[in-house]
Image (cartoon, rainbow, N blue to C red; front, top):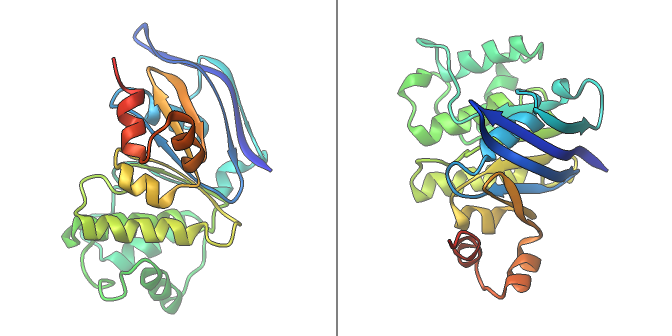
Length: 232
C-alpha cells in the first residue's frame, strides 16, 4: 500500500521555480531517504508531502483523509518548552497530541529513545544528540503510521548519529511504520534506508533501492552515486 502518491508537483518562491514536476510514492513499512544537494528542494518536497505547504501545481494523495492524526513530523529544530525537564516536555507534547501517559509510561518512552537517565534534566541542557532523540520521542508519542524527519542527524558526532540511525531502524522494524527522512550523510543513508530518492534541481534524478541504484550506475557506494549525480 502507498501512503502518499505525488504527481507533477511544482512549487515556486518569489518567481523562482524550486520544484519542477515531481512524481513519487511513499510505500508502507519502509525507511526512505531523500537526498540531494543544498537547495535541491528536499525540505520543500517533504513539507508538501506532509501537508505543511501547498504545491502550486500537481496533486498529493494521502492514504486516509485524517492522515495528519497518523503522521509524526520532526523538522530540523524542535522548540522545546523552556524551563521544563525532558519528562515534562514529553508530558506537555503528549497532552497536545491528546495522548494519556502516566509517569511510568513517560519514563518508558524516554528509555526507548535512550534517555532513561535524563528525565529530570532541563531539555535546554541536554546535548544536541539527546535533544534530537527527545524530538524523536515527541514525534512518535501518538504511534504514527508515517514518520517524517528533516535531517534528523544533522550536526551530530559519529556516536550520536549511530544512535539516531538505530532509532530510525527500530521505528520501522516490524513493517507497520514508514519513515521518510532527508540527509546529507551518505553513510547514514546507506546503513538505514530501504529506498533512496535523489533530488537534483527540483526534480527526481534517481529513485530505488540502494543496491539497485548502485548497480544501475556502476558504483560501489552511495557517496559515489551522489558525486556522479551532482556532476556539472
